[in-house]
Amino acid sequence: MKFRIIIFILIVILLSSILFLIFFTKSSDKTGTQNRTVKLSPTLEPTVVVTPLTVNKSEWKTYSSAKYHYQISYPPDWQLLDEPNVNGIEIQKIDIQGAGISLSVRVVDNPQKLTVENFAKAQAFSQSAGTKNLIGKTTIGPFTAYKLQSLPQGLLFDIYIPYKEDQVYNLFAGGSVDQIAKNNLSFYQNMITQMLDSFRSF
Image (cartoon, rainbow, N blue to C red; front, side):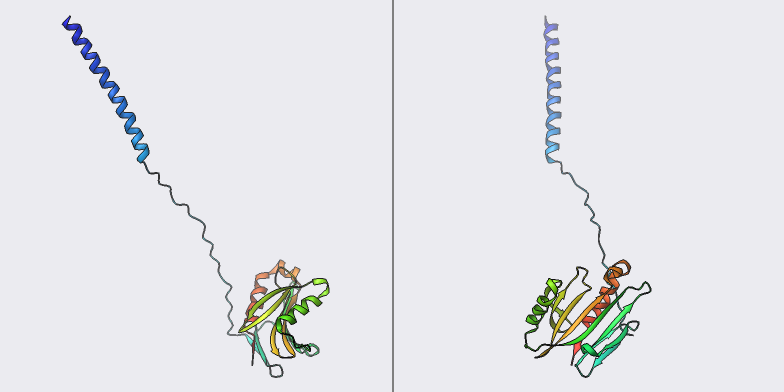
């Protein structure tokens, strides 16, 4: 009888131990899961480095107009042409594929003595059926000017800058844009921008 009691006690102790181990193991796993911190490796985003087009202006030429009191600089491999019929000049570049771009500087009469903003608006309105859009204010060198643009590439545009009460400066860029876009659009855009920035009146 005593032997049976001892066996029973041992079995109870053994079962209790097993149940305790099972319960403890589950509790540990649950607690560990709750306290565990998942560390994600940082995602490296690609860095885009934009390298601006550098222009060496040390060899650029400068054209000055004593009659109309302005000056503008241009690259030595661009050609300067006189445009006496429109009171101005044309600076052009033609590449070996025949594509070209030019920047003209003209003095335009403003007989109604409009502000430059209103003059630009009038010019936009007069362009056949709105082929040019008034972009608005822009900065050319030290001047606040107004820009009309006809193509999204930004290579055909008129810019109007204050000059006299009855005259304004008109900087006009144009060229064979479709062919330019196939060759080196960024080159021409950069050159035109640099030339515009050099414009001064005196």
